[in-house]
Every structure is written in structure tokens, then in C-alpha cells.
Amino acid sequence: MWKQRLAEFVAGLLFGLGLILAGMTNPAKVLAFLDLAGAWDPSLALVMGGGIAVGVLAFAAAKGRARSLLGQAMRWPRASRIDRRLVLGSLLFGAGWGLAGFCPGPAVVSLAIGGTGVYIFVAAMLAGMVLFECLERFSGRRLSSGD
Image 1 (spheres, one colour):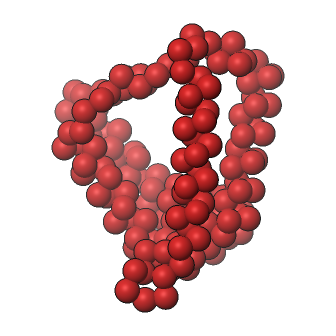
Image 2 (tube, helix red, strand yellow):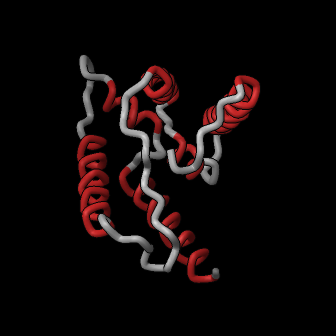
């Protein structure tokens, strides 16, 4: 169990440091990427491309494995269709990202830096998660961890 926790810590630390070094914890940099008609900053595209490349390599290496390197069972997503929930969730995520300049990972990292904006964003994000869970329970729908 300690190996799993250590791996989680190291992965989270590398992710957070990468976000800081790439400037993704600065909402002005993210908003400059989204400002196609103004002073566009393409550096976020390079960060995204690097993340996609690492992900593609990691998924290719893990493809067909039944167990992770630490012995945990591999649980691959089973959902394969684009539905209304996915589209609406993506639109909501994109709207929040465009308005605030934060997405969840950089926002959590930015909590250490502080600032009213990040605290408001994280509080709103957590409230949205709680609201989603309440609506899921109320509607009787529940996504399994494998979907």
C-alpha cells in the first residue's frame, strides 16, 4: 500500500511542478491562450501537446495489461459514445475555464499561492461537484467507476 501512496505522491508532485513551470497556474496566461483575436499566447498548446504525447505513450505501454506496475487491477473505461451528458459537461467545463482561466488541476495547485479568485473558483468547483452528486442520487442514476 505504501508503494501506491508514494507513486501517487510523486505523480501529483510532478504534475503540480509541471503546471507551475509551464505557467498554467497563472489564469492570465490561460486566458491569453483563449484570446485568439488579441494577444494570443500559443504556449498552452505546447503544454497540451506534451501532455497528450505522454498520455498516448503511457496508454500504448499499458494496453493489454491486466495489472499496473504496482499490481493494481487495470480498469479501462467502457463508455465509448458521445452523449448529451458528455457534451453538456464539456461545455460547462470550457465555459468555466474561459471565464476563470483555471481548470481543476491548476486551481488546486494555485491554492498554495493563494488569492481570492482561486479560492472562489475552487469553492464553486466543489459546490458543482456536490450538486452533481445530489442530482445523480435524486435522479437514481449513478455512474460506476469503470464508465
